[in-house]
Amino acid sequence: MTTSQQPSRRPQLLQAGYEAFAQPEVRRKVLFMVAMLIIFRFVAHIPLPNVDTERLRETFDNNAILGFLNIFSGGALRNLSVAALGVYPYITASIIMQLAVPLIPRLQALSQEGESGRQRVQIITHWMTVPLAAVQAYAQLLLIQQLGGISEIGFGAGEALITVASIFSMVAGTMFLVWLGELITEQGIGNGISLLIFAGIVAGMPSLLGGGLLTGTSVAISGFVLLALIAIVLVASIVWVQEAQRRIPVQYARSTIRGGRMYRQQGQTHIPLRVNSAGMVPLIFAFSIMIFPPVFFQFMAQTVDVAWIRTASEFIARVLSPAAPIYWLFVFLLVMMFSFFYTLVVFQQQNLAENLQRQGGFIPGIRPGRPTQEYVMRVLIRITWGGAIFLGLVSVIPYFATALTGVQAVQISAAGLLIIVGVVLDTMRQVEAQMMMRNYEGFIS
Picture 1 (tube, rainbow, N blue to C red):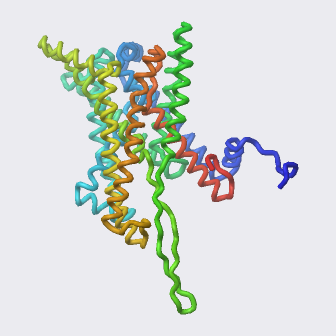
Picture 2: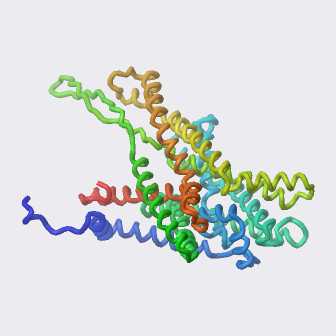
Picture 3: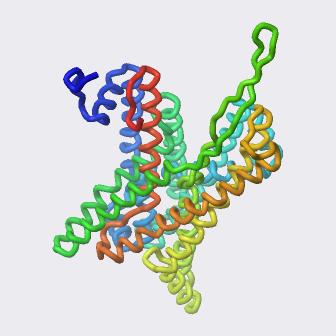
């Protein structure tokens, strides 16, 4: 086709978005997803009963640890909303179940029973979420009370009813969000739980950005510009590493019968091994572990009357706070460790060599069975080094970015950026799959 014959086209991204929204089924899924996210944001602004919001905001403004926790709740924790816990207790339960399945024979048998078995594992995950949410709710309420944000939390006379009602409200909010997420997965576009986390992080960004810009000084504004450039480079790097993969060629021997004779045919495909197979899980593990010591020792410093214990607790809480270099060193090491741990656990669950051999597939030059398993393991460990080092660097970007730019009011959440990029890419792929079924060009291809 000559240039004069080519029809005028909008930019590919806008054209793909227009064509996606023009399809009734895709439009219905997208609008349903948006409606559920709007409901989520309404719920995130419903506070618990008997909460002084002004007093609560002053407490969060004066405590870096609470501000760090508030980022991932999309501001719901700062308002002490019924959705203050978000879906993180469910994510914790899901990770525990994922690690427990290969270790507990009963759960492993359930996971191999097809769809019904997976549904039962999912039910167990839901039940496990409830006590985890209750424990986390009480711990957060107790911490905020010790820091002066709220009062009347405990199980003494006159406090038990308020405490139980607050815990039940927060647990109910978490389970409601889990239900919303599963509705989005079933009837909308993308993974519902991931989209809720994405919406919470994005909702908290305007206040963070506004806090950085409203400082008013030229130094802060120039630092903010440099911070924005760092964020752009970081997002581009995340996209590049998330899409990077090592493709191991695989051949399949196929037999067909024609005219009473058997013919053998060779089909070729590949095994895509991602450089970052673990995704955002190592970051969640590392930050979940590292946020506990400063919270615990800060709680000890506020409650214990023994002088030397209070002094030691204050020192440890200060050394391990998110503003201290040693905190980020431990985060880097933990992210590296969990990247290998999670990748290898998931790889062992896949039984790749056994499944290949059962389907008649083999890697050219590698014997089937155990040699195939050992070969893929060596390749996976080699490329995981790159993914683990990258995730470790991503995890410590907030510390270096703050030190370089001098902008203290804006906190870059590297884990948040990774979640945002991953969710956007996954949602675009799902929209693209819907359009490709109708012979349209997608967002990525």
